[in-house]
Length: 439
Image (cartoon, rainbow, N blue to C red; front, side, top):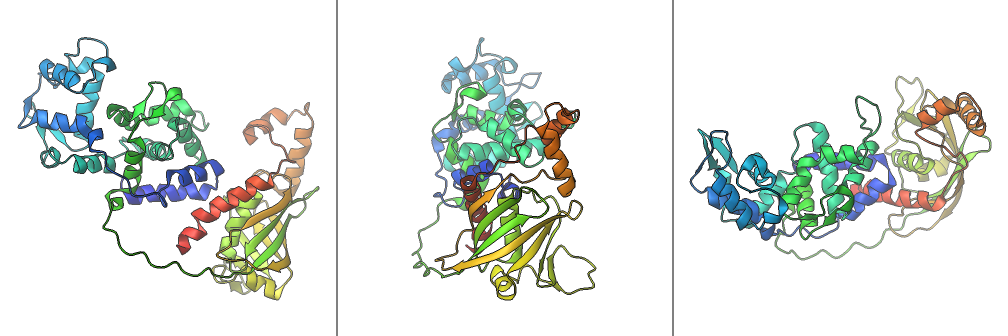
């Protein structure tokens, strides 16, 4: 996967606002950690094979490496304990089979008229282990279809974030992106992730970067994190000559505004109390509200401030404002209360009351100060539908309860709300959206 494709998928992960996925991105250190450091020793198996192939190796009639070279490979690379058997037939010696196949898929070797030959890249990189390391990194993940490509990216993220069970995080990421099994309609589980990342994880295994054979017993070996980060960032992240650092800019003072957000027609009310920068645009406030309330950004939205509408408004006979140019501070200057509507079908209206204004130093991360009750499930039918959901869940004997729980994906507690967790999610979301745009 090239860096632009990886960056596009990473942005999709950011838009999920799922706390575990944002933490995964944080821990992978793609924005903050030093550039990856090549580990020439890690790609020694590929370098050895390239050197052994040399000007060419005649393959067997079935297209495999000769038995003598299979045995020599296992012995020279110290792989005798990796596989059972006599180690003299490639089709029965998986480590050698994968090494040769992956070298072909990386564009280092090719078959031609019954012989195995080095490609142009393979010849050039035989004596350049650092270049070979980058060549391998830039061609990860190994994937045969789109699902494997996305899963491979998530696997690399999990390894870069030093997660000991990367496949579990792959499954979580696939679910967060809304991918489901076509046959069952369910999100992927860890074993699905094992299948989807089989080739990519096998590369890390081949190079001795992952220890432990079972996915539940994985341990990161030396160099795994660096290779995963290099695969995500590309050679452009290679260390560059140092340049004098510019002096840091002076902190910018930005007034903060307290907002109380109440979801109308819910009883007891679903509400949040937030502290946001006055400079926050309405479009940015939309993301903050989605995150703080718990919505999934699956529908259109609009704001109405002092009779002017902003957001996803089409064919309106009334004036329509630019939500990118109008800020929370602008709203506070013309009114003490405005409305945010989300999902025009269900019609969720949020009453936003403007409270006190405080001094804030720097860019000001949005904060969740307080709140109550869980966000209603998406697409539950608005306030009347949500009231019905609560009634059904409150009655263990209700005939609709099993079907509703299945639709919800498990139990749902309408009273559940954690201000600290919401505050942490806001900080992560802000770091991965607005702060990135301003950096």
